[in-house]
Structures are given as structure tokens and as C-alpha cells.
Image (cartoon, rainbow, N blue to C red; front, side, top):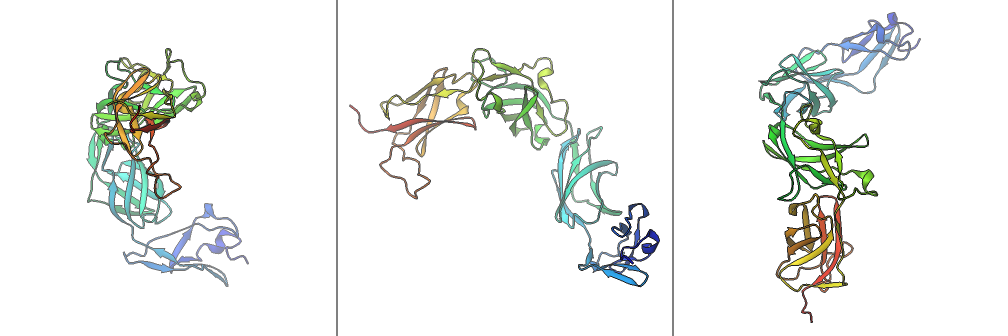
Length: 376
């Protein structure tokens, strides 16, 4: 006879786990192949272990490894707040957090937090929406065993709201702007940003969505990186006719900040071509005055001075102005060393430093070498 039985009646009362009876489910039984059963806990917090045993008439099968009864313990949760629209990723930390076959998490008995992953030390779930702002506690169920956590509360806060989105240089019309390669600063003003975990700015182009990360500066201000619109890198927009894109924000499950450009008073996102910085005319540029000028095209269409970094070897050239075709910066008073060659431990002290212009987080231009040596 097969050890897992030829019928449900064969194994109905023959399954034990660590010495405790395990009641099989008839609708989940697969003849000779699979038994699914329910075992109650040992009735104490002590860890209990033992083999799984299946006995059918005179036949007895035993698992090679022991089954452990453990006592899940919650020690902390993070974050302790999130918007009332839900969608916040909550991490519940403790011991034996993956015990049992069915793990459930609830806020104040009524609002489920949908479990997406469990490990020995952490359960991760996504909060559901609340009708109102409220403060309460979470509890967990490991199968039918309840675990409460009273040391920390969780707060459903008011949803974030966006009041303005803008970028570009001072004096320009304040609308959200970006470049094809993305990574330049977009300033966002509003309310309740501190309660959102990982806000992102997104734009739509040709039925696809492109994201840029946002960073919370305060409860009322975000700085976002403009999204990189990859398909346009080989076919840049006309600088005099930027592409107008719909855009919005991903802030947990808050719907009011999505598709912001559809709202009255919010202009479209203006996508300009990447700026282009040109190399020095000579092989070695001699530093002749207090300022260094670097030429290019479309430099300030969407960018501002704070989007651009100029590096000279191991030091920096402080950007003082940015116009359509020129960037001006003030180099350090003493010639910096060249950047260390990654193939060698020490750089050649005689090597001239290179001038590197970085725009946002995705664009770099090698402009050439700079010398402070006397020139004639």
C-alpha cells in the first residue's frame, strides 16, 4: 500500500506532527501523492519539535527532518506613518516571522495590510486605504495564532498634495522642464511629503512611462530628478519646439497627485534636447584669468547652474553663470592634480588635469586638459 494512502479514509487519522494529530483536508488530498493537514499548536510558548509521521494500517513513514513549533515575536515596525490612501510598504521585524502557512496583518482589526513577503526575521506588507486620518496598532495572525504589538503605533496621515512644479534658470517662466537624458532638478511644492516613502516623478511618452526619483527636503518641498526618455536619445527634440508631456507623481497609492498635468493651473512638462558642451579648441587650454569659459549649445534651455558640475582633476570649478551657449566658472587658485588612473595606484604628478562637465546625474562631457603653466 502507498504510504500516502489510496483513499482519504486511509490517512484520515494517521498523520501526526511532533506527536500532535494533524487533521487532513479532504478537498486537498491527492491520492498517493499529497496530504494537506491542520495541526494545532502545542499549547505553550516552549519550542517543540519532532518528525512528521504518516501511518496507514501497518505501514509507517517518517520525515527525515523535524518540524518545529515556534513562537513568533514582533519587535518593531517601520515606517510608523503613511498616507490614508494606503500603498505604504510596511516592514514588521521580529523572530519566526514566516511561521505557519497563512500569515495575515491587520490595522486595528479591520484594515488588512496585504502580505507580499515573509522571512525568518521580517514580514513585508502593503497598507490598505483608510477613510480618515487615524492612529492605531497592528496585529498579526500566523494561521490561527494571534500576535499583538503594543510598543509602536501606526498613523494614517492626510494624503500629500502638490501645489506647484517648476524648474529652469531664474528669470525663466516657471514650468516643469527636463532634458532627454534626464537627471536635472525639478522643484515640487506642496503638503505632507514627509509621510511618503519613495516618491517618484513620471512622464508619459508614446504610451510609455518614464520615472525619476524624488527626495524629500521638507514636509512641503521635494526635489525630483527629471526622467530619462530613452527613445529620444537618437532623435533629440527641436530646441525651439520642446515636446509637451503629461506627467504626475507616484506617492504610495495617492491618486490625487497622479496625472497632475490634467489639472487646471498645471502646465505640461516641457522636454528639451540634451545640452551639448564642446571641447577646447586647443589640445591644452592655458588658464589665463580668474574665470574659465566653456562653450556649447542649448545649455540653459532646461538646466540651471545647480544642475551643472565642472570638475578640474581632483578639484572643482565653481559655476558662476550659465547662458544659452556659454558656461563660466571660477577654477581653484592652484592647479589641481590629475584624477588617479584606475589602472595605477598613483597618478602621474606631471599629468595635466582634465576638465569634466557633468549635467544632472546622467550626462558627462570631457572638455580637455587645463594647464596653469605660464603662457606667452
